[in-house]
Length: 450
Image (cartoon, rainbow, N blue to C red; front, side, top):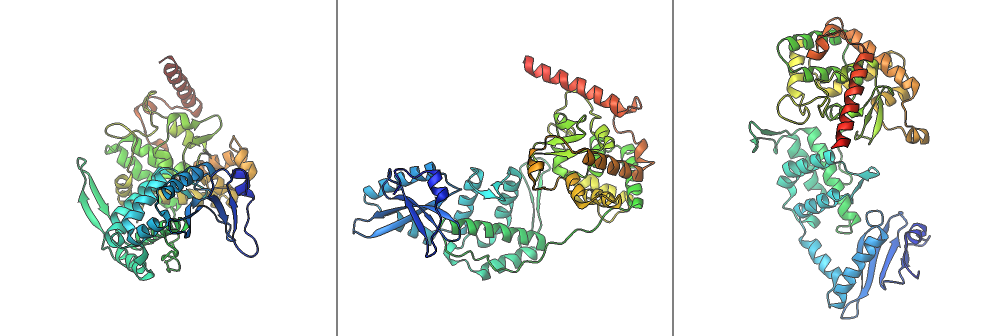
């Protein structure tokens, strides 16, 4: 028994060859940690009931709880024991009555407080937004009423089948003006819902609320790999469609954003939330504060940088402001569908432009590692984690790919007037950056003064 259970003691604790091992705290009697052969470590309390029976109660997993958080929780539970309560029996009774709806509430609360680790990090707000939607629209209506202990594989398979055939699909008005919520079913939606349900049951299993995850072993169809991409002819037709859309009055920031998606290979969310201060023209990159793989630098060609620097005014907060009201652009679905119809393309979306960017890079004989760097895919290396500048070779590659795509969209897209500011003069990249830098520095000084 240690004088006081510490992080160092918990880190050093491993299970023995014959089974679990325990380490107990000398400061709070009855508080300890159990190490299993699987590598999992769980904080526990051990106590005697009023009838003399020994009980153990799991407080939570190490990693989800720190040692101090677990110690405080242990003090609270042990205080209940002194009052004559039996926390273990109370939890068993709660488990028997707990429903999937209640698990959903508990899961979301833990995730929103940053205590749920997903792929080595806490869940992003955008991921939580999708989780809430899937829980509300698909999981709760079908299995939310079921007692947690009663859910079987058959229930999960039924959930998969019902969402796949569209039983939970809906088209509803929201409280916002002209707002609609269109909930679609289908196999892709069903697979994502089952994966989320499995994560929730796994959370319940780690918390020792249930013993078995009923989603384990469910056969799910493989994700469809997207193989479509834009050919040289497709790019030319897209360029002409953009020119026609601009002459018909499509907002210039939408035209710029779609063109930027084509020239950068960025994810849609990365460009829609881009701020002027995120553009590092001298470093030839975008310094993204929040991407799918976390903060990162994204190499960017000069054609793309010149496009991004064509701001409508020096004070705007977003590179692509909303066409109406405040904030940034949110939805490009309708403009992209309109352009697809105008260009005679079967389908046009942000991911197709990103996939096509990678295809052009491959056609230019760049390696898979280089293409991964251009697209911002996670690269697990010590060098990558400590780099603060975009590699020269990546910058050149980004430049070559963006120039190749711009040329394929020529001549229509190269002569496209994007903003009133760009129409007044034939701005070079250097001119654009000088203006952008001056306006940015002035804005930063203004913020300091106020």
